[in-house]
Length: 306
Image (cartoon, rainbow, N blue to C red):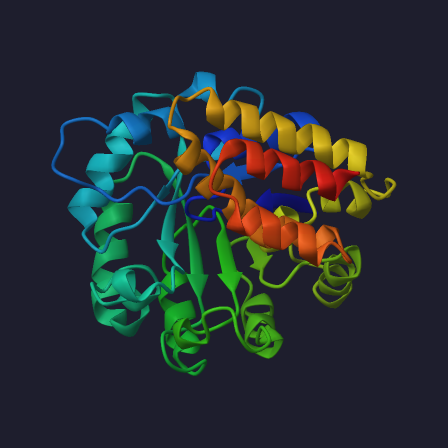
């Protein structure tokens, strides 16, 4: 079984990926938060910082692309090839309403004919390996049977399935019966994604679907960065290890010169998940959330770890 870190917009940045990779049990593969094609000849400074090989040393990184236009995908793929990438990932899973309203992400799943034309053009011209991260439909799980037939027409590097529909967002339980349909259908390698928050969650998926080759974990890792170690049979991460990771993140963000306000915004996003590793610290977590200055934030963090 291989394990991947799921891309979370605004959270699993290059700063987060590198700090995690250095401080905890590394993942087998990492994915960038999605790149949206644009008219610029090259990447923006922010995008370039995310994909530069020197900013991602020692890890296997796959850039993710969000679009419903084949030409835009192929142009972005071509730019990425200049930096040595040989695999890219198509985002068909983002449930954000602003993305879905434009027919992208999981919104593209509501147009199977358009999706089929899109994939046909990609695989007619691509020079890279392409994996797909998808949900099982926009409105109804019944949509997935048709989508699966479309996916099976093309030589996907991997199909990463989050077994929820778009309108579920992250509510309700993942539909394991529909995921099982994909497993029984065979075809390209499959990766399971969705609600893997504990070692037991991962173990249950591995036992139920022994032919599945990978699991992608997102919120579970952000909430408990020691989870990968637990899955590999290591001890639960202690406060000192999490503190080293936190301090590395905090200082690396500060070194970018982005200002305390933006640094605190980044750290508070992470604490929305990481706070679950500190039961009984609700008062201190509330102080972190309210902190508007670096010194107040640092005081609240010190209270958490002591």
